[in-house]
Image (cartoon, rainbow over all chains, first blue to last red; front, top):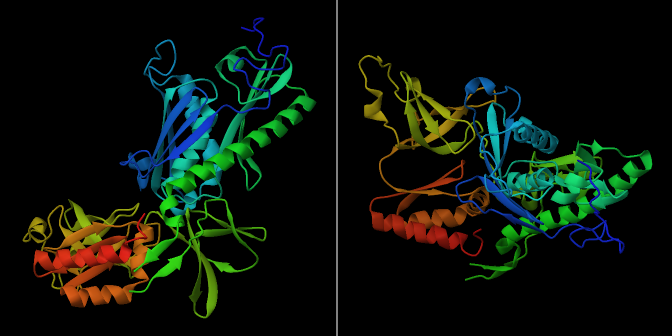
Length: 245
Length: 215
C-alpha cells in the first residue's frame, strides 16, 4: 500500500542517506566456487547473491535440447533466511517469473548457436535480499558466464530506477521498492548500447521516463566498470610481467 | 637460461580488440568496424596461409571438437555396439565397435567391457563432428588406443595453448625423460613412460615450461 512514509528528506537525501542519483556500495567477486564452471558473487547494499554456471553440458531431459542452439536455463532462488520473515523454500510465482526475466535479459548477450544440443545452467542464490535482487543477479550472472568461458557479445549490467516522493531515484532499496511510486529495472549491454531488459511498475510521464533512462545509463556504466574490474582481477596474475625460462 | 619479459593485454567480452577490417577467428565478432572479443583472453595476430588473422586466445573455454583432432578421452558408458567417451567437451563422444577392431566381430561373442572398461583412458582421433551429431572417435590407428599407464593432467585452454606453442621444448622433454607426451586437443595431457620416475621427471619439466605463466 502507498503510505505516507517519506522516502526523501528535506535535504534531498534518501532513507539510507544516499543522493537520488547515487548507487549503493557495490562489490563483485569472480570465481568463488571451485566445482562450478563459472561463478560470481555480488554485494549491492544489503543484497548478497551467489551465482554458479554449469555447462555447456548435455541436456537432461533430452527432449528439451534445441537442435540449433544451446538452451539457457536460469534458476533464481531466495534462501529461506534471505528476508526478515522466513521465505518458504518452494519456488513461488515470483521466483519463477524472475528466473524467466533474467534468462531473457542474458540470452541476447550469449552466442548460444556455438553449442547446439547442450544446456547452460545458471543458478542464482539470493542469500540476503534488500530490493533490486533481479538486477544484481543479472550483473553477477553475466560475470559468472564470462568466467565459465562462454562466448558473449558483451557483459550485461543492470540497475533499477524508480520514483519516490515525485523524484527519480537510482538503485532502489527494499523500502523505496515497496513504498515508492514506481520501479523500473533496466539491463543493458553497455558497449553495444543495447537494452536487454526493461520492466516497469507504477507510472512515469514521458519526461520522467527519459530522465529515468538517462539515470539508469549512468548507473549501468558505473556497474559495468566494476564488473570489468572484478573479472580482470581474477586473472591478475597473468597480466603482470613475468620472467619466462 | 634466457629471460624474456612479456606483458599481456587482457581483453574481456564486449571490449574492442581493434578497429578496422581484419580477418578474425570465431572468438572475435565484427560490429560495424569494431572487432569485439567474445571471451576473456589475450589478443594475438596469427598467420594462416600468408594472411593475418586476429584471434583472442581464451583463458578458459569449452573444447569444441574438430575433425582430425587427437583427444584424450575417458570411457563413461558402455552400450551394445559402442562406448561413450568423455572428451572434455559439451558433447559426449561415441566410439563405435567398428572403430576399435580392424576385423569384423560379432557382438554376441565379444564382451565390450573386456576391451575398454568404464574409467579407462584412451587416446583417440575425432573422425567426424558437425554440431548436429555427437563426435565420432576412432582408435584404429598407430599411436592411438588405450592408455594402460601414465600421468593424466587436465589443463585449461590458456595453459594448453602455451604448451602447444612450445612444441620444440616438449620434444626436448620427451627425449630427456624418455617419455611420450601426448597433448590432446581437448586441453588434456598424458605422459607415458616406462617407469613412474621417468613420468614424474617429465611432469616436472612440463611444469617448468608452464612456470610463471600459469593461471
